[in-house]
Length: 310
Image (cartoon, rainbow, N blue to C red; front, side):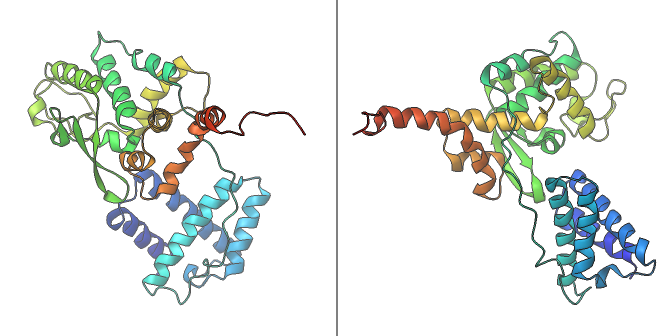
């Protein structure tokens, strides 16, 4: 089996068996391709399954010397670790050379999010007199009401929406299903959207909530809106409420979690709503409670207020 065959087999595995997102698969493919180019630049006949630990370390050092940040290096190492773990588990290599390579220590980054006033302003920006604006309103409301990922939003199927129960069945990371609850704001936006779409197409024949293309009346639309399009739609409105260029559709997900916790939601409940597999992924949002905790501490702890020095 050639080097490219092994990489292709691994990519098929994470795509069809592990259910990784197209974005993640592209990243892994690029990282592994870059590593293979590195190996073959020294030896055109190199065997990626027989790579030594020192070669991977040298690869990372070369990347570091180019000025790549620790987060990028960590991601590339994660790609290699996952790949060599797969090779070892499938007996395509005799040892996993990446097990003892330490991941660079990363600074804990707090997520960028909107404050409640900005979030409220964002929801009111789309033009309600156009089909495009009505669609955009539903997209924004879904993000803020449910905290779903952009890959989850574009894949919503009409059959998975239960309007009366205010529930959507979502297919998340690793093909894991979960139910998300949505607000009356979403109900109103959804009904308006469906009513207007029904004037253009045969809704009953459609598969996805947000189809990829527009055709003539009663024509079935194939596929769903692409991630890049959804990203651009949301980014356009985010720029109107904040000068923070780091804000993205994922920032609305951060806002969803932050605002829930700020208003007393249970951390475990938020974990389930976000579809996190571990609590550690959710705990980053606890930063929003620090000021709230300080106020509670100052108000209730006997030694919170200074009584002067002795």
